[in-house]
Image (cartoon, rainbow, N blue to C red):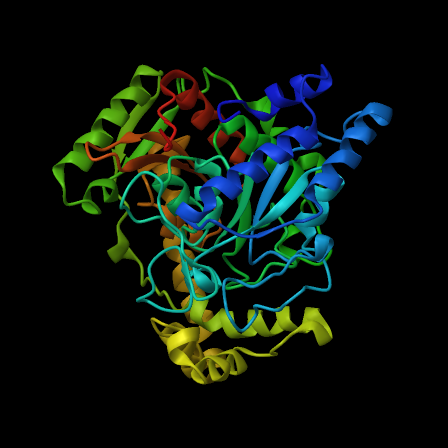
Length: 469
């Protein structure tokens, strides 16, 4: 099952050789068997098999609703899930008893498409925005997510989503990203990660960090599944103004855009930060070999430079936005919200620091300290941050590029600051078995071509290997 994509699974279902019940049971059994070793899944949907049975009956009578019909999906546990009586906790003790009073917009779209939500996954607590000291993949509620490829950083904050996909605990996992939280764990665990353009996928019903940078996206074992899922969760939502200008007809069919020859003739820019970010020669040499592979697929590779010193890069945007965004989220919960503000979260944690914030909550505290400066300093911080992100536009225009290529997460910060998309695909492993990802980035709403580039690379080189022997 691990090597089958959704198209192949749907073919088996259409032929009567596989049912959603059988597929769902397969994944639930794998969670039961393997999750104790990797700590990826926080909660199981006890209704999953009954839902799968209903979807099997629906298929017999009316056919499938979409390509996700009957397909098991796991959700990052910062995504509201009123349906099926599942918690939404962000991995925190303060929210451990939260049952959201509405589904996130993307959850509604998944359910409408016939996906089987089989549970919620662990994450870096509050999407990695609570402490500088806390390791990737750790939450006070869920503990530490572990990398199945060895004693390596699991990446964050969508750690559970990536590990669940890697270990085959679901067909599709949904993660969220503010600055690397999909690309980082996906590349660290040898799976596909798609960080969409801000404005393509609604954030309504997702515990926020930043209205400027937050986005949700798929994490899968192959590009086909990622393309299918992105089509399902994309779309206009009246509750998220970033999607207001997005018309359904403007969203391409990402599956149909996939082309094994798509890298032939394109110009790919390789920024020097790929090499600046890594001290070991093995990693640098690894990426040089990856560049050669792109050239063999017909791409022209050009070395480019992204000059940070040309911009006053301000990282305070998230700290200014977080308290306000979180308060607005709590308001949407009404009486269901156990707290109403970030200050209340901090006070709750202070009652038992050792259990509730075993590393610390200094990021939270810094956000509260900065609240007094919001009116005076936020807009300047936002302008300088976006200015740095716009460097992507100037580099692409200057060198006439189709996309940029990065090793692992080298480019996530600059793309995140301006809300641009990235797609990462497994590019192999170091000598000690550490996964390495190849990440494509370009300007807004270019997911179709980025997915196609990743697909072309995957089809020819197919570097991903099963972490479980």
